[in-house]
Length: 317
Ligand code: NAP
Image (cartoon, rainbow, N blue to C red):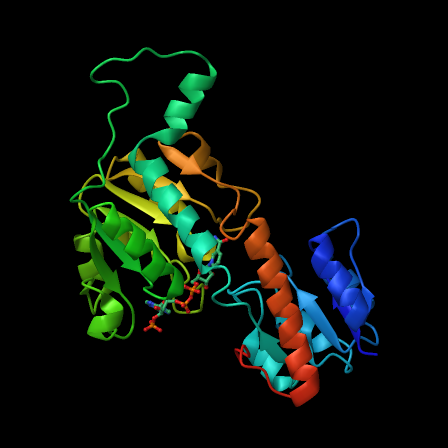
């Protein structure tokens, strides 16, 4: 029986399934393993079912036991894993695409609505019974007719744009490559990021964190946005230079932010906390029972496929 280290606690039904298939090392306390502990616990393991909270950098991967042949990441993003280091060790890396698209897009839309309609301020005032209805109370930005810039029109970006379109938003996007007209579904392509930003009344960051995209939203690129734009990020914190975005909020260049992900999470840059227009969530993108169950099942399917065939359709390296 193959031995698998499962680095984070999963939903019960997924752990029950794993028990029928493998000799598993579970993390019943759901502690965040240090590099040292993760390496120790993977002794004699054939694979690791990892999570985005595991920093599988080159040094950690180099020190993994020789028995480890696959890192099945419980996420669609794999910015936590050094793919080059995995390639050098001939370790397969897999992810869980598609099953989390809808849930994450829902949070992407919540970020847009929450930031544009001043939900953070509204919730605070309602909870304190400190408000009264008036014609000019908490006036926000209406989405109808507003231009939405999608940075990364992939699975999640497309689903966000479909919902946003139904809300009357006009969709623009930037990818490295232009989509077919059918996939664009009326969205307007911008070859350059600067061009996309210049028309983004609302920006939705949906691209993966990679060497190319780290801090791609920074002091210089933020200047391309129209004054009073809204910036939302449902992808990864590493894509945004926090100091630059907070400075843009301070200067009212940016009207509001909607964020689900953060550099160095769960600690947030304190600059965001002082802005009442910051609508902030604790990385809830895929957090529904249906989606978390499907993600873990897919991570298990990836292990199964890999051990049976030596290949896996969700291999990313
Ligand atoms: P996807 O289908 O692979 O889409 C990624 C899109 O980004 C593609 O359209 C790609 O187009 C574009 N892109 C990649 N590199 C780029 C670059 N350097 N510049 C501009 N565009 C670039 O991925 P997905 O399933 O939509 O997921 C996207 C990301 O969402 C994941 O990587 C993950 O980090 C994040 N996510 C967050 C949560 C959460 O809980 N908040 C949940 C799930 C996923 P080109 O290749 O043509 O450039």
